[in-house]
View 1 (cartoon, protein in one colour):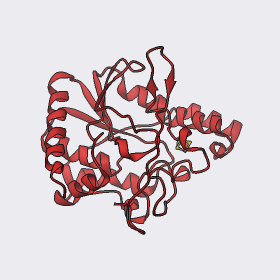
View 2: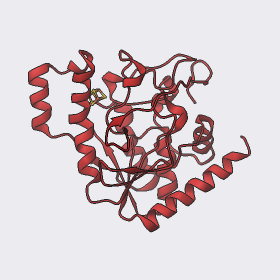
View 3: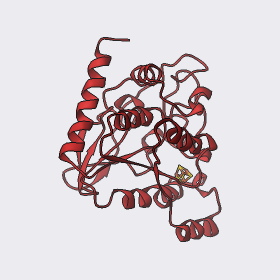
Length: 251
Ligand code: SF4
């Protein structure tokens, strides 16, 4: 465990306390993956007044949904769920088919818009800040991630308290504190999204190579985390990051 680990944990605690004190009401958008379980543990152990929610897209793995029970059992906390509008899902499926997201980037983004982006907008409404578990080292699209950034699209601040955490930091924290985590992480899934759009990765592959694997790397965001330039245009940040986990493990 490198010497900076304890400092990063302490700094993250301090950021969360500052968010609770200065940006209330604030919410944490949890995907129930490893990074998000670190933040869940930090928030709930400290009893910070930060509401935790998750986007229940209707296409999640059973293991991911099972994390809702694990959190309830471990912390006595009920994560709020935001689901897509049933009419929008029905219209998309009846017009395009259940798995039309494989057909084109546009069809995939439209599915993500219906199942993720619109519910996210509902979940964020009325808050002053939101929190994510994104890390810079996760992907080609997150290399320039800031701990705190303006989110003009939602009219609030956005915090990424784990921006400078390594994958080892995340797993050190989970193990040291006995935090429950999604069992898919033990099966080669470093990044977990919807079931039909996520697969396991091999050693040396990009950490998010298993997400929308049929698309080019610079397309791999669902619309929840775009960067907005000063002129109001949106873009994704690009870089190249490889997984360094031993074969058969993603931790
Ligand atoms: S990740 Fe796949 S199934 Fe989930 S909302 Fe996006 S396109 Fe649809």
